[in-house]
Image 1: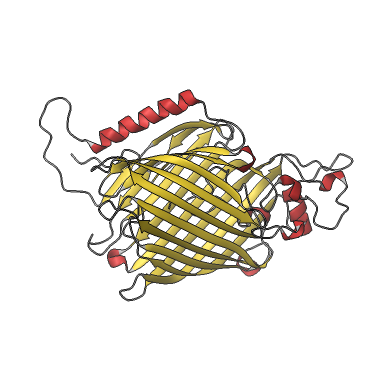
Image 2: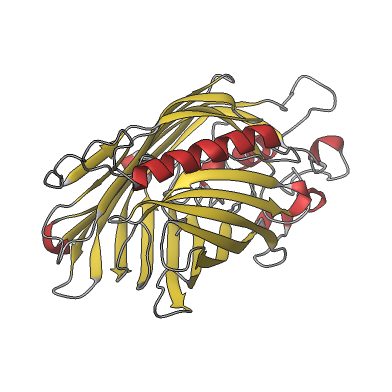
Length: 433
């Protein structure tokens, strides 16, 4: 009987601020994860009966994973986190496709629904990248730019910064909002190379936005970073759209997109958001990304150092606050371990990460470990903060459990630390990059 990985989809928990996850809960979760993963690795019956004759392997493997967790931001979380792996062609010339999703509800009245996929068609002639999200959620913002809060004034240069409403806010600025995302990109392979090029459509809609700290009825008024930015640039602080098309160029020679051992990945995307396609204001955004893998032991391909960097830039026009480049808003939400999603945001952003990966067994591949360091820098032109004026660091260690040798699907358990007391516990599927 064929048993694929017991944990189909990546789900991670983030502890953002100075709060630790209770060690008792962490220990219980770790025991459950490892025992279930071990069961997935060994399909032999413990009853003493002979195992059933193996069936022909299915081209599609779907695993519905119950999602039960807790963190200070979301409270108690429950739902399902389905994952899927499939082949669209012959295994000799077609890469493994994968999809990850969530349907999560929380005790803080959040609903998180996602579907993210990377699909390779037969012979890798076409590649499709899909990112669908619907959130009813809450999330803190800390203003634009990296660096200490004391460097991030609320005002936009049009008022006296000594007035209280324009002073930096030293704490998080909690926001509640609904969010709909529809992104889909289709790329055509160029001849027999690993180069792809194509077009994409991207739609983002933030609505029912509520700045919890905002108070316009007091004297002086209490303003937030989001409200000041939105009013200054002519956006409705309660709702806005970006809708546009993109030109894309991709190079992907990785041997496995789920858990690469070798190869390179480079991606360039220029997204144009004109008003005639539904955007609140004209704008364009540029994304540049590169990943590489350096082997340390030829006989153990899992022993390597991985490199990941991307740059995300406002190239023209005016972008709504929540659509500005922000850490953790890459397709699979993997960047910025140690920090909450959107902890750093700005008109321009650069992200860098290096990860050391090592197997923990002499010959087997089930258990592995990682150590990682990342750095984020973001600009705030209104606050006179430029790229690399501040570089906020995150670092941590993690455990890897290979729950499916064929797809190389890994169960990830990471703990990370960052600046300003930030720390986070992460639980997911597949390698981070």
